[in-house]
Structures are given as structure tokens and as C-alpha cells.
Image (spheres, helix red, strand yellow):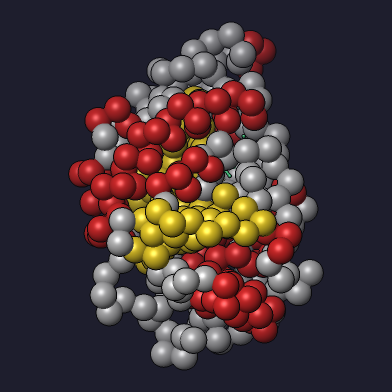
Length: 304
Ligand SMILES: O=P(O)(O)O[C@H]1O[C@H](CO)[C@@H](O)[C@H]1O
């Protein structure tokens, strides 16, 4: 698969030729969160298979469809389906859709995901508003930015301090429906697709992580490389095994305080995400007026 700047530009031009207006905000739906696209007015919808160079979704709960419409007054593109490293995609393939959307006009990216809680008191149905992340694959050399740098996407060495926009985070925390018990925290991205062992969860906790998942970090890294503003929202679908869990019977014991000790399977993750999606939709509707701002654009001078 061609993941070059030229391939992204071709996909972006294909989209722009079909859209009533270029998108300025993009939203990536996490597992089971495809219903977030229902917030869009006047939607136009495209299967990923139609869009030049796009990868194909292989995971249940990721429809593989791009829906473009208005979120409040903001032209918004919703990716109903993301790509994960465990599907066998390279890091550059994982971030191809959001690079395409950036070239099509997007300046603000909302990343959503389903995640396991590592923090006592943070349980299924709660929302972690991502303050920072730990990219285990990236730290091990599997960043989407590895390889020759194309300066048209961004600089060779982008900063990742403040990667998640503080203003958007504060807004999300203040506007979230009370049912989500929204709290800021650190998301750790792991490779998957097996869920974590109790010992791995202990390790991730000592690293300072509050929630764990298999996505988001590559996308946030590529988005900052592109100069996009990023908001990250983790809907907690399960608790990861806690310190109190005996490795022999992790399935029997309630873990970090709330909900079943971890996951059991993707079906449960999808079911929990679908329950929380209702409140997440309310949050998006409340955030909508703040996501697009006149004058805001990609911070790179040569942005198309
Ligand atoms: O991060 P999203 O795409 O929401 O999906 C999460 O759910 C799947 C595991 O159930 C993994 O892909 C994990 O990353």
C-alpha cells in the first residue's frame, strides 16, 4: 500500500471533489463508538474501499466508513473505523486516513477509544480525558514517523509536550455529562491483540498509566507531526486486573474497584462502549461549537 504524501494528496483530492465543503474537524471512532457519526447533520458517506489508497477495516465494531457532515456548525469528518498495529498494518498505514483528512483541510482531531482502566475508582462507563500518553510501540521504534521524513507532513523531530490540547481538554472535562465522571489521565498504547496479564497491568501502573488500549498513540503522534490540535477521549469499558488479583484467578475478582476484572473479550468491550456512546454523543454535541474556530488551520506554512 502506498502511504506517501502523494498518495495522501490523491485521497484528499478525491474526497474534496465529492464533498460539499472541506472538513475542518475529524473524529476517529473507537471500538463500538461508530454511533458518534449520528451527531452529524447532512451526512455524506463513503466506504473506505472507495477511497484511493485507504486501508480496509478488519476489526468488529469498526465499520470502515467515512461520514462527512456538520457537527454543530463545523464541517466534520468521522472515521467509523480505525486501524491497529495488531491487524498487521504498518504504523504509516494506521495513520494514513488522518493524514489524508489533514491534507483535505482538517485542523482539529478528536480521537476516541475504548480502554481498560488501570486506576482504582475509574470504571466502566467513565471517561478518561487524555492528558498525555505513553506510546510503547513508538518507544520501541514503531512510530509512524520512522523512516525518511517528508517535510510536507511535518518536521523530523516534532515535540510531543502538550500533545493533547489543554484548552480542549478543559472544555471536555467541564462539558462532559455527569454520568461519564470525566477525569484527566494518561493513556498507554500497547500492541495487543491479547489483553494484558495482571503482571503487565502492574507494570503499566508503575509507568504512570491510568488506562490501556491498543490504539490512539500512533494517531496522536502523526497528528502532532501535522500540526493538528488533538483531543483524546477514552471511554472505559472494563477494569484491568488489579494488584489484588491473584494471577491464577484473575477472572473471578473485581479489579481496580469497579466492574468486572478484565476483559474477557472484545464482545464485552463493544457492549460497554455502546452503552457509554450515548453520553459521549452528548459531550460531542456540547463541544461542537468550540471545535472549529475561524482562522484556525494547519500550522504548517505549506498546508494545501
Ligand atoms: O482503541 P479502540 O480502537 O477503541 O479499540 C480497543 O478495543 C479493542 C480491544 O477490545 C482494541 O482494538 C482496543 O484498542
